[in-house]
Image (cartoon, rainbow, N blue to C red; front, top):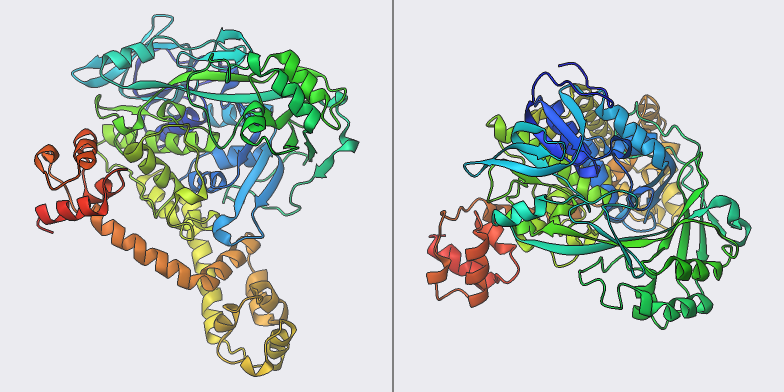
Length: 635
């Protein structure tokens, strides 16, 4: 099929294999994955100029979120590539902590991020783009069969993926002023929620928000603390052909003060969050500035980050000052902040309420339980964050293709990826606030590091047909080199004067220099770079690598130093996996089992888990309930 232009679409027919509704972070990954796997895919968006739009801050990654981006990249997705090519600052967070906590984060040029996504999608075979609004799903015998658009066009498809973001019945709040919309200056989507509820889906409302944007020329950066990015060449994508291409820029730090807080308190009667105007739940971990001054009333200041929107833009994002107060209150409060005394506002912050659907209505493939071949991904499932959306998107895109081609579904486990933790939490626990990924949500953090995502997922994706041959070759090359280095360390003695000297420098007795270099590396304060610096043969192995030297060195060192912790977590994960192999018969009558707790009977009847492992992860189902089920199933 010819490649579709972003400005035109082949209209020879109106039948596709898969339709993706919405071109945010979930939709872009879903459409890209489905098309690259071979499905004729149509991406429908309300505005082709905002494909991949960063609705809130111009950044990708962060704690646990950076790990998700690495996983998307390892699966053959595009978010890491797009981020690297639009990056204007890169930082590896938490380097002072253990490697399970290291998390990459990148500031992006907002316009370039969109352009990179447009370039990616419009050069992908099997993928077409249509600008319009989907108002109705076509349902045939409890299966999705296509969509109808606002323009009256009927598109047929074997599978549909909804990635509507904050657009479903979206309502913007600027103080007491309310404007229907999915984002500022963009209209809301109406009709789909009503149809889905009529079909039996449960819908609720959530809230999120965003801060004001300021004119760079009106900011006194000299009064602020500069925060530069890392000087290394680290990036998100494992592909050596992908580079950070743009000029690197700094962020700046300043703080609110008691005067700021007094101004905000005076404005609380007009805050939609406190005058009863907004009833839905917002993100607890990313509160608005008005919530901060109430929740943390004892704090005299709150940190603000001034983040650039792009290389050629004067727009700055005020991270930490999300607000839905009247614009006059926001501006007055900002003028009381050091460095922002004369700031000029491009647009105020606002809150947005939108519809989402209880994610326990989904299988772990992200296919809905009520309608076959209908998939949900992103904020429609009650999540927040670009990365969480993109992770769901690539899984939905893969599984939609697998469904219609009778392939094996992709279900990522909790010990396999943060994406697996995310989807498992959503489909088994549901949400009572916008879901955001944290490292604390994963039991197997040392297994799910940002550095080893390719080792966890590339072979899986290659076998599915998404990760291409070049990506798989690079992965195999990395594994081969790691094995060579480990073999050298295991077979080389550390009982030489030069290594004794290294031990003494780090506070060890020279007489402790026995065993192999592998054993020596397991000691605290001894790192692989030190050994390479004084071992010519090992240095020669490293210098022969054409690329990815630091990445491979770090990977080897982490595997060796944390081998005991890794083995222990793997053992625990294997035990849990055994529960996932014990199937529960369809239609199992939990309600008749008086030996189960009342809460367990209700939860199990409603969610109908397929395995004992699934049941064990449902809130309210206790270990005793699981023991009862095991006995009843003859285990």
